[in-house]
Image 1 (cartoon, rainbow, N blue to C red):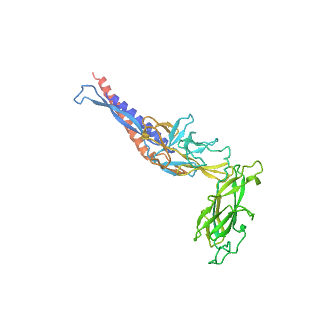
Image 2: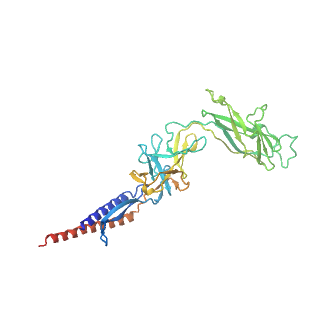
Length: 414
Protein backbone atom coordinates (compact mmCIF):
# COMPACT_ATOMS: atom_id res chain seq x y z
CA UNK A 1 0.00 0.00 0.00
CA UNK A 2 1.10 3.56 -0.71
CA UNK A 3 0.72 4.58 2.94
CA UNK A 4 4.33 3.45 3.53
CA UNK A 5 5.63 5.58 0.69
CA UNK A 6 3.78 8.68 1.82
CA UNK A 7 4.75 8.26 5.48
CA UNK A 8 8.43 7.98 4.55
CA UNK A 9 8.01 11.06 2.36
CA UNK A 10 6.44 12.99 5.23
CA UNK A 11 9.27 12.00 7.57
CA UNK A 12 11.92 12.97 5.03
CA UNK A 13 10.26 16.31 4.24
CA UNK A 14 9.89 17.02 7.96
CA UNK A 15 13.60 16.29 8.50
CA UNK A 16 14.44 18.54 5.58
CA UNK A 17 12.35 21.36 7.07
CA UNK A 18 14.15 20.92 10.40
CA UNK A 19 17.54 21.33 8.72
CA UNK A 20 16.38 24.32 6.69
CA UNK A 21 14.91 25.95 9.79
CA UNK A 22 18.17 25.40 11.66
CA UNK A 23 20.08 27.07 8.83
CA UNK A 24 17.74 30.05 8.73
CA UNK A 25 17.87 30.46 12.52
CA UNK A 26 21.69 30.67 12.32
CA UNK A 27 21.92 33.02 9.36
CA UNK A 28 23.58 35.61 11.64
CA UNK A 29 25.69 33.24 13.74
CA UNK A 30 29.42 33.97 13.48
CA UNK A 31 31.35 31.12 11.86
CA UNK A 32 28.24 28.95 11.38
CA UNK A 33 28.29 26.36 8.59
CA UNK A 34 25.03 25.39 6.91
CA UNK A 35 23.82 21.83 6.35
CA UNK A 36 21.71 20.14 3.72
CA UNK A 37 19.55 17.00 3.83
CA UNK A 38 20.56 14.31 1.39
CA UNK A 39 17.94 11.68 0.46
CA UNK A 40 18.02 8.06 -0.72
CA UNK A 41 15.28 5.80 -2.01
CA UNK A 42 14.10 2.69 -0.17
CA UNK A 43 13.68 -0.54 -2.12
CA UNK A 44 12.08 -3.80 -1.01
CA UNK A 45 13.78 -6.87 -2.35
CA UNK A 46 13.84 -10.59 -1.68
CA UNK A 47 16.06 -13.44 -2.78
CA UNK A 48 15.03 -15.02 -6.04
CA UNK A 49 12.43 -12.41 -6.88
CA UNK A 50 13.93 -11.71 -10.33
CA UNK A 51 12.08 -10.31 -13.29
CA UNK A 52 11.96 -6.80 -11.89
CA UNK A 53 10.12 -7.85 -8.79
CA UNK A 54 11.98 -5.39 -6.58
CA UNK A 55 10.07 -2.16 -6.05
CA UNK A 56 10.45 1.13 -4.22
CA UNK A 57 8.85 1.59 -0.84
CA UNK A 58 9.63 5.26 -0.21
CA UNK A 59 12.45 7.57 0.77
CA UNK A 60 14.80 8.16 3.67
CA UNK A 61 16.94 11.10 4.84
CA UNK A 62 20.28 9.38 4.27
CA UNK A 63 22.43 12.04 5.94
CA UNK A 64 22.67 15.66 6.92
CA UNK A 65 25.84 16.96 5.22
CA UNK A 66 27.65 20.01 6.58
CA UNK A 67 28.76 22.61 4.04
CA UNK A 68 32.17 24.09 4.96
CA UNK A 69 32.25 26.74 2.27
CA UNK A 70 33.86 30.09 3.12
CA UNK A 71 31.63 32.70 4.75
CA UNK A 72 31.98 36.41 4.07
CA UNK A 73 34.67 38.18 6.12
CA UNK A 74 33.29 41.34 7.72
CA UNK A 75 35.40 43.99 9.43
CA UNK A 76 34.41 44.41 13.07
CA UNK A 77 37.04 46.81 14.42
CA UNK A 78 37.56 44.74 17.58
CA UNK A 79 41.27 43.96 18.04
CA UNK A 80 40.47 40.53 19.51
CA UNK A 81 38.27 39.45 16.60
CA UNK A 82 39.92 37.30 13.95
CA UNK A 83 38.55 35.49 10.90
CA UNK A 84 39.96 32.50 9.01
CA UNK A 85 40.14 33.01 5.26
CA UNK A 86 40.69 29.51 3.92
CA UNK A 87 41.08 26.10 5.51
CA UNK A 88 41.32 25.40 9.20
CA UNK A 89 39.65 25.74 12.57
CA UNK A 90 40.61 27.42 15.82
CA UNK A 91 41.43 24.82 18.44
CA UNK A 92 39.84 25.43 21.83
CA UNK A 93 39.79 23.67 25.18
CA UNK A 94 36.31 23.31 26.61
CA UNK A 95 35.57 23.80 30.32
CA UNK A 96 35.64 20.01 30.84
CA UNK A 97 39.16 19.85 29.38
CA UNK A 98 38.20 18.24 26.08
CA UNK A 99 39.32 19.62 22.72
CA UNK A 100 36.93 21.27 20.26
CA UNK A 101 37.23 23.26 17.06
CA UNK A 102 35.47 26.40 15.86
CA UNK A 103 35.41 28.94 13.04
CA UNK A 104 34.03 31.69 15.28
CA UNK A 105 36.85 34.10 16.11
CA UNK A 106 34.97 36.50 18.40
CA UNK A 107 37.41 36.10 21.29
CA UNK A 108 37.70 37.99 24.56
CA UNK A 109 39.84 38.14 27.70
CA UNK A 110 38.12 36.86 30.85
CA UNK A 111 38.76 38.06 34.41
CA UNK A 112 41.59 35.56 34.92
CA UNK A 113 43.46 36.67 31.78
CA UNK A 114 42.50 33.70 29.59
CA UNK A 115 41.73 34.21 25.89
CA UNK A 116 38.31 32.57 25.52
CA UNK A 117 35.43 32.12 23.10
CA UNK A 118 31.90 33.35 23.70
CA UNK A 119 31.08 29.95 25.24
CA UNK A 120 34.00 30.13 27.69
CA UNK A 121 36.33 27.69 25.93
CA UNK A 122 40.03 28.60 26.08
CA UNK A 123 41.75 29.39 22.79
CA UNK A 124 44.83 27.27 22.08
CA UNK A 125 48.08 28.58 20.64
CA UNK A 126 51.84 28.37 20.62
CA UNK A 127 53.47 30.32 23.47
CA UNK A 128 56.48 32.49 22.63
CA UNK A 129 59.47 32.86 24.94
CA UNK A 130 60.13 36.64 25.25
CA UNK A 131 63.83 36.00 25.86
CA UNK A 132 64.45 33.99 22.68
CA UNK A 133 61.48 34.84 20.47
CA UNK A 134 60.97 31.13 19.82
CA UNK A 135 57.56 29.47 20.02
CA UNK A 136 56.65 26.17 21.61
CA UNK A 137 55.81 23.22 19.38
CA UNK A 138 52.83 22.13 21.48
CA UNK A 139 49.60 24.12 21.60
CA UNK A 140 48.61 25.42 25.04
CA UNK A 141 45.69 27.47 26.42
CA UNK A 142 46.54 31.14 25.98
CA UNK A 143 46.61 33.24 29.15
CA UNK A 144 48.00 36.71 29.89
CA UNK A 145 49.19 38.46 33.08
CA UNK A 146 46.25 40.68 34.00
CA UNK A 147 46.75 40.36 37.76
CA UNK A 148 50.50 40.97 38.07
CA UNK A 149 53.07 42.99 36.11
CA UNK A 150 55.63 41.38 33.84
CA UNK A 151 59.15 41.16 35.25
CA UNK A 152 61.78 43.73 34.40
CA UNK A 153 64.49 42.85 31.88
CA UNK A 154 68.08 43.98 32.31
CA UNK A 155 69.60 45.77 29.33
CA UNK A 156 71.96 43.61 27.32
CA UNK A 157 72.74 45.94 24.43
CA UNK A 158 72.58 49.53 23.20
CA UNK A 159 72.23 50.47 19.53
CA UNK A 160 73.33 53.92 18.36
CA UNK A 161 72.53 55.55 15.02
CA UNK A 162 74.44 58.84 14.74
CA UNK A 163 76.87 60.87 12.65
CA UNK A 164 80.33 62.02 13.71
CA UNK A 165 81.56 65.20 11.99
CA UNK A 166 84.20 64.22 9.42
CA UNK A 167 85.66 67.75 9.62
CA UNK A 168 86.65 67.31 13.25
CA UNK A 169 90.43 67.31 13.88
CA UNK A 170 92.25 64.83 16.04
CA UNK A 171 95.99 64.49 16.62
CA UNK A 172 97.58 67.33 14.53
CA UNK A 173 100.76 65.27 14.07
CA UNK A 174 98.87 62.51 12.29
CA UNK A 175 96.14 64.35 10.43
CA UNK A 176 97.16 66.12 7.22
CA UNK A 177 95.73 69.37 5.82
CA UNK A 178 91.97 69.00 5.56
CA UNK A 179 90.30 69.18 2.18
CA UNK A 180 87.55 71.32 3.69
CA UNK A 181 87.45 73.77 6.53
CA UNK A 182 88.14 71.79 9.69
CA UNK A 183 86.16 72.02 12.87
CA UNK A 184 88.35 73.11 15.74
CA UNK A 185 89.28 70.37 18.22
CA UNK A 186 86.60 70.05 20.85
CA UNK A 187 86.56 68.55 24.30
CA UNK A 188 85.07 65.10 24.80
CA UNK A 189 81.60 66.35 25.72
CA UNK A 190 81.08 67.87 22.25
CA UNK A 191 80.34 64.49 20.72
CA UNK A 192 78.37 62.79 23.44
CA UNK A 193 74.96 61.35 24.21
CA UNK A 194 73.28 59.36 26.98
CA UNK A 195 70.54 56.81 27.50
CA UNK A 196 68.88 55.06 30.42
CA UNK A 197 69.45 51.32 30.69
CA UNK A 198 67.71 49.00 33.18
CA UNK A 199 69.11 46.69 35.81
CA UNK A 200 67.51 43.37 36.78
CA UNK A 201 65.17 45.18 39.20
CA UNK A 202 63.92 47.49 36.47
CA UNK A 203 65.67 50.58 37.88
CA UNK A 204 66.86 52.98 35.15
CA UNK A 205 70.59 53.70 35.15
CA UNK A 206 72.01 56.52 32.96
CA UNK A 207 74.82 55.56 30.59
CA UNK A 208 76.83 58.17 28.68
CA UNK A 209 78.75 57.60 25.46
CA UNK A 210 81.38 60.08 24.25
CA UNK A 211 83.43 60.16 21.04
CA UNK A 212 86.79 61.88 20.56
CA UNK A 213 88.74 62.00 17.32
CA UNK A 214 91.98 60.03 17.71
CA UNK A 215 93.37 59.73 14.20
CA UNK A 216 92.34 59.92 10.58
CA UNK A 217 89.04 57.99 10.34
CA UNK A 218 89.40 56.73 13.91
CA UNK A 219 87.56 57.74 17.07
CA UNK A 220 87.95 56.77 20.72
CA UNK A 221 84.83 55.80 22.65
CA UNK A 222 84.47 56.74 26.33
CA UNK A 223 81.77 56.31 28.98
CA UNK A 224 83.03 59.13 31.21
CA UNK A 225 84.34 62.71 30.98
CA UNK A 226 87.21 61.88 33.32
CA UNK A 227 90.28 62.91 31.32
CA UNK A 228 92.38 60.28 33.07
CA UNK A 229 90.09 57.41 32.08
CA UNK A 230 91.11 55.07 29.28
CA UNK A 231 88.76 54.69 26.31
CA UNK A 232 86.37 51.74 26.19
CA UNK A 233 87.51 51.14 22.63
CA UNK A 234 87.85 52.66 19.16
CA UNK A 235 85.79 52.70 15.98
CA UNK A 236 87.24 53.00 12.48
CA UNK A 237 85.70 54.33 9.25
CA UNK A 238 86.72 54.01 5.61
CA UNK A 239 87.40 56.88 3.25
CA UNK A 240 83.68 57.19 2.47
CA UNK A 241 82.74 57.66 6.10
CA UNK A 242 81.25 54.19 6.52
CA UNK A 243 81.79 52.08 9.61
CA UNK A 244 84.53 49.47 9.27
CA UNK A 245 85.15 47.96 12.70
CA UNK A 246 85.32 48.48 16.44
CA UNK A 247 88.04 47.43 18.82
CA UNK A 248 87.39 45.47 20.92
CA UNK A 249 84.48 43.70 19.28
CA UNK A 250 81.93 43.84 20.68
CA UNK A 251 82.53 47.15 22.37
CA UNK A 252 81.08 47.26 25.90
CA UNK A 253 80.51 49.61 28.82
CA UNK A 254 80.35 48.54 32.44
CA UNK A 255 77.22 49.69 34.26
CA UNK A 256 77.20 50.14 38.04
CA UNK A 257 73.62 50.56 39.35
CA UNK A 258 74.60 51.35 42.95
CA UNK A 259 74.50 55.13 42.44
CA UNK A 260 70.77 55.14 41.53
CA UNK A 261 69.72 51.92 43.26
CA UNK A 262 71.25 51.95 46.76
CA UNK A 263 68.89 49.34 48.25
CA UNK A 264 70.74 46.08 47.69
CA UNK A 265 71.41 46.76 43.99
CA UNK A 266 72.40 44.10 41.48
CA UNK A 267 76.07 43.63 40.66
CA UNK A 268 77.62 45.75 37.89
CA UNK A 269 77.32 44.22 34.43
CA UNK A 270 78.58 44.82 30.89
CA UNK A 271 76.32 46.22 28.18
CA UNK A 272 77.34 45.89 24.52
CA UNK A 273 77.23 48.94 22.24
CA UNK A 274 76.34 48.41 18.58
CA UNK A 275 77.93 51.22 16.55
CA UNK A 276 77.75 49.49 13.17
CA UNK A 277 75.39 52.13 11.75
CA UNK A 278 77.44 55.14 12.89
CA UNK A 279 78.75 57.32 10.04
CA UNK A 280 81.53 59.88 9.66
CA UNK A 281 80.25 62.50 7.22
CA UNK A 282 80.90 66.19 6.71
CA UNK A 283 77.91 67.40 8.70
CA UNK A 284 77.31 68.30 12.31
CA UNK A 285 77.13 65.68 15.03
CA UNK A 286 73.58 64.35 15.20
CA UNK A 287 71.94 61.41 16.96
CA UNK A 288 69.22 59.84 14.79
CA UNK A 289 68.32 56.98 17.13
CA UNK A 290 69.49 55.57 20.44
CA UNK A 291 67.82 52.44 21.77
CA UNK A 292 68.34 49.66 24.29
CA UNK A 293 66.64 46.32 24.88
CA UNK A 294 65.84 46.45 28.61
CA UNK A 295 62.69 47.59 30.37
CA UNK A 296 61.09 48.09 33.75
CA UNK A 297 58.20 46.00 35.02
CA UNK A 298 54.83 46.86 33.51
CA UNK A 299 51.13 46.05 33.63
CA UNK A 300 49.15 44.67 30.71
CA UNK A 301 47.20 47.45 28.97
CA UNK A 302 45.89 45.87 25.75
CA UNK A 303 45.98 42.75 23.57
CA UNK A 304 45.49 42.39 19.84
CA UNK A 305 45.78 39.60 17.26
CA UNK A 306 47.78 40.27 14.09
CA UNK A 307 47.07 38.85 10.62
CA UNK A 308 49.73 36.18 11.11
CA UNK A 309 48.03 35.01 14.31
CA UNK A 310 50.57 36.63 16.62
CA UNK A 311 48.98 37.75 19.87
CA UNK A 312 50.57 41.13 20.60
CA UNK A 313 50.47 42.42 24.18
CA UNK A 314 51.11 46.05 25.12
CA UNK A 315 52.32 46.97 28.61
CA UNK A 316 52.42 50.17 30.63
CA UNK A 317 56.23 50.29 30.42
CA UNK A 318 56.02 50.89 26.67
CA UNK A 319 56.85 47.32 25.70
CA UNK A 320 54.81 45.67 22.93
CA UNK A 321 55.76 42.08 22.25
CA UNK A 322 54.42 38.85 20.77
CA UNK A 323 53.26 36.55 23.55
CA UNK A 324 51.83 33.69 21.48
CA UNK A 325 50.58 32.62 18.07
CA UNK A 326 47.06 31.29 17.54
CA UNK A 327 47.00 27.63 16.49
CA UNK A 328 44.93 26.32 13.59
CA UNK A 329 43.75 22.75 13.07
CA UNK A 330 42.78 20.96 9.88
CA UNK A 331 41.20 17.60 9.06
CA UNK A 332 41.34 15.19 6.14
CA UNK A 333 37.53 15.09 6.08
CA UNK A 334 35.97 18.15 7.76
CA UNK A 335 32.47 16.90 6.94
CA UNK A 336 33.10 14.05 9.37
CA UNK A 337 33.30 16.48 12.31
CA UNK A 338 30.54 16.23 14.90
CA UNK A 339 28.70 19.43 15.78
CA UNK A 340 28.27 19.80 19.54
CA UNK A 341 26.69 23.26 19.69
CA UNK A 342 28.12 26.59 20.74
CA UNK A 343 29.78 26.99 17.31
CA UNK A 344 32.00 24.00 18.14
CA UNK A 345 32.85 20.71 16.47
CA UNK A 346 34.73 17.70 17.81
CA UNK A 347 36.76 15.21 15.83
CA UNK A 348 35.43 11.77 15.01
CA UNK A 349 36.64 8.60 13.32
CA UNK A 350 35.25 9.89 10.02
CA UNK A 351 37.00 13.28 10.25
CA UNK A 352 40.39 11.85 11.14
CA UNK A 353 42.78 13.27 13.71
CA UNK A 354 43.46 17.00 13.88
CA UNK A 355 46.65 18.32 12.31
CA UNK A 356 47.91 21.50 14.01
CA UNK A 357 49.79 24.31 12.31
CA UNK A 358 50.26 28.04 12.06
CA UNK A 359 48.16 30.46 9.98
CA UNK A 360 49.33 30.73 6.39
CA UNK A 361 51.58 27.66 6.54
CA UNK A 362 50.98 24.88 4.00
CA UNK A 363 47.29 24.07 3.68
CA UNK A 364 46.22 26.37 6.52
CA UNK A 365 44.25 29.52 5.75
CA UNK A 366 45.32 33.06 6.48
CA UNK A 367 43.86 35.17 9.26
CA UNK A 368 42.16 38.56 9.05
CA UNK A 369 42.62 40.65 12.18
CA UNK A 370 39.76 42.82 13.41
CA UNK A 371 37.20 40.88 11.37
CA UNK A 372 34.76 37.98 11.71
CA UNK A 373 33.61 35.24 9.36
CA UNK A 374 29.86 35.45 8.74
CA UNK A 375 27.56 32.45 8.55
CA UNK A 376 27.69 30.83 5.11
CA UNK A 377 23.89 30.45 5.02
CA UNK A 378 22.36 31.79 1.80
CA UNK A 379 19.07 33.05 3.20
CA UNK A 380 17.39 33.43 -0.20
CA UNK A 381 18.29 29.88 -1.21
CA UNK A 382 17.06 28.54 2.13
CA UNK A 383 13.69 30.23 1.72
CA UNK A 384 13.34 28.66 -1.73
CA UNK A 385 14.35 25.27 -0.29
CA UNK A 386 11.77 25.70 2.45
CA UNK A 387 8.98 26.24 -0.09
CA UNK A 388 10.15 23.17 -2.01
CA UNK A 389 10.16 21.07 1.14
CA UNK A 390 6.72 22.38 2.04
CA UNK A 391 5.34 21.32 -1.37
CA UNK A 392 6.91 17.88 -0.95
CA UNK A 393 5.26 17.54 2.45
CA UNK A 394 1.88 18.59 1.05
CA UNK A 395 2.24 16.19 -1.88
CA UNK A 396 2.97 13.25 0.41
CA UNK A 397 0.03 14.23 2.57
CA UNK A 398 -2.11 14.22 -0.57
CA UNK A 399 -0.87 10.72 -1.34
CA UNK A 400 -2.17 9.55 2.04
CA UNK A 401 -5.49 11.30 1.43
CA UNK A 402 -5.88 9.66 -1.97
CA UNK A 403 -4.97 6.24 -0.58
CA UNK A 404 -7.54 6.71 2.17
CA UNK A 405 -10.21 7.41 -0.44
CA UNK A 406 -9.22 4.25 -2.30
CA UNK A 407 -9.46 2.23 0.91
CA UNK A 408 -12.87 3.67 1.64
CA UNK A 409 -14.05 2.68 -1.82
CA UNK A 410 -12.84 -0.88 -1.31
CA UNK A 411 -14.42 -1.18 2.12
CA UNK A 412 -17.76 0.07 0.83
CA UNK A 413 -17.97 -2.46 -2.06
CA UNK A 414 -20.97 -4.79 -1.74
